Amino acid sequence: MSHSIIPSNSPVSIAPDQAIYMGLDEGKSATRVVAVDEKGYVRGAAWGPPGNLAHHAPEQIGARWSRVIESALDYGQIDRTQIAGAGFGLCSLVWPSDRAALEAIVAQLGLPCPTIIFDDCLMVLRAGVPRAIGIALLAGSGSGVIGRNAEGTIFRTFGSSRLGDGGGSWALSERMMEWIALSYLGVAPETSLTSKLLVTGSFEDIPTLLEHFVRHPTQYQCPHVIQMIFEAYEQNDEAAQCLLHDLAQRYVDNIFAVARRLGFEGQSFELVLSGGLFSAPRSPLVSFVDSYTHNRFPDVKLSCLREWPAIGAALAAMDFNRFEVPEEVRLNALASGPWAKESTNRE
Figure (tube, rainbow, N blue to C red):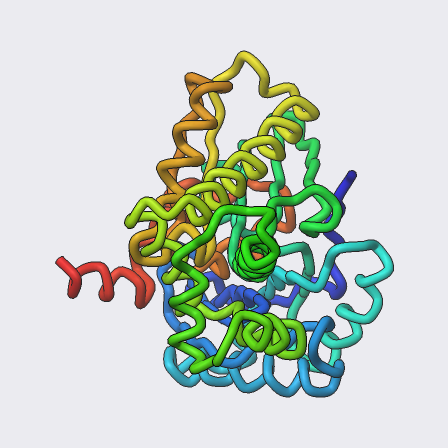
């Protein structure tokens, strides 16, 4: 599946030392914005509630994005006239038919600069891999794999667990509940997750738990439930072990498919992992993907993007998909955001 990036406006004239490039990350759980200067240093950052086409009206999305953008500009004491370019990494951009609606939302923001939109997986690749040559796996609420080779060819999966992707926290919670249902029927082994959920939700029996899941599935897609699966894995629960190993294997199958399409077989390439399923406390998924990937690609260079992927959107606004911005700029952005302070505090 090919991918294209199209600037939607004409360039503006701003003195280089005053120019600011903005990146917006539209996820299913939050909206994040960063503003960087020409050298990559983060001057403004903010996050707010999600706004995406799957769950919100276009007017609501525009209003939410606008509030987060203004918060980022206020944080850095940045005037809107300083914005020389803006990139939007959007989980809503899955099919070509999505583009028109998303471009209309971006146009409503009234930004005084060129704007480009692209999918969130490419944003991760741009933020996490030098020159954006390699493969990125994003696993948050959903999942997707994208790659770009030295010739500039881009190929990605469909970003849907129903169309071959491993899925994210939503798919994992559904597979957990399916296991519990099959266990109740006597088809699958019992799992400690059943009793944990019964106690947590104060359900009187398993059918009541399952009914609640069917009627309120989003309540089981939260970090608390995912952490419950990770804890069950540590306690050698068979269901948790099978679910997580299967998820990692699905990820690596897609990594292999993208690598093969882009001619990475037999080569050393960069692989970056990003998203809540990898960064969550006690998650074993990074080590699983690392192990499975190296079985197929011994020379792969794996890393995890702990910083906000919105950096990739800001970088794309700087280079309009030419990927010619110096590597130093990317590294400056990764090292200068609010996440850098959080890392220092943890140490």
